[in-house]
Length: 249
Figure 1 (cartoon, helix red, strand yellow):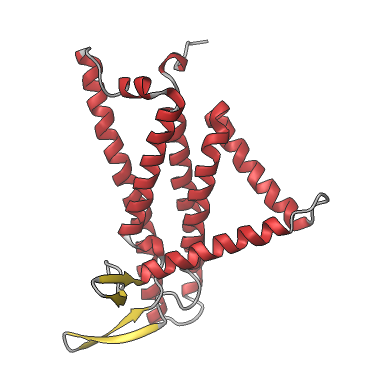
Figure 2 (cartoon, rainbow, N blue to C red):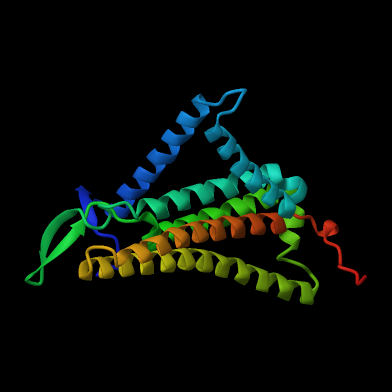
């Protein structure tokens, strides 16, 4: 059974480096290496691979534009960064060796496997950090786009009704962080537990459908996190005077 908390692998004085941190470094290495390699192979006359990459990016850009309109250029890099990082983190944890290659330690007279690598997003610390970065980037973008005065007017007002709404908005921002972090963590951790359980009982064939399901779950969760971040950014970077009431046809 997978441990709820990440397992420590390296101790440097009082600093403890868990296996999920090593997995995070691996994800960063994969993304940076892929970005450098692809950028060097960009040609005026694109190859089939370049056409596929450009088509995917264009599709995501158009999706962002349909929601963010004239703020697409500012929001799109955040959307794609979160999406790619979480997608690679989710899918890399399905590689054989993650969660199974490690060393044994004695705990309460029982041998326990400590995996060297464990999926980064199966660690609540990682998903909470992603959610906090998303929230911080969203509010900084809002201040930069609409100005500090318009930004503060969302939460503070001399009008009692608007002030009450502002307090609810502040509570909503806190729940967004909790929702983003626990949704991603819960889905990935649950999938990790299912895969470990089925693999320990049935070594071949039977775990394959669950593995394919986790591929889909990994994609969906990366897309959900990225799109929610994109939507939050689009909403908070919209000035109040641009918000119009929908009139019936």
